[in-house]
Image 1 (cartoon, rainbow, N blue to C red):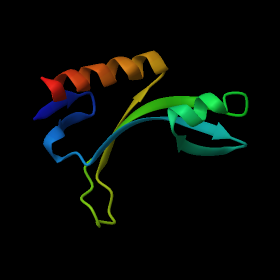
Image 2: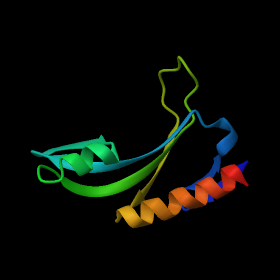
Image 3: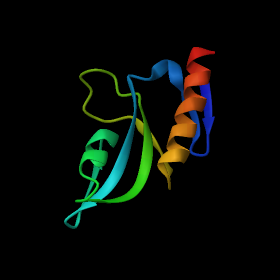
Length: 90
């Protein structure tokens, strides 16, 4: 099942994980964090962007096979998550 994105086509049949995250600045360090962690620490971090990560890395493989779509707002991220859900649950 192919999902068409601005970053290219993603084969959803090969996904091992699909997750949302935020990319934050924490004391000068950039890190990818869960949305829940970001909400709990909103007063300590600056959100740089939101991402939806499509991870197709097979178990026990060290080289990561990931595509991440970036969004300026959490609302844009959630809208994209809904689109992916519709395709997966077709």
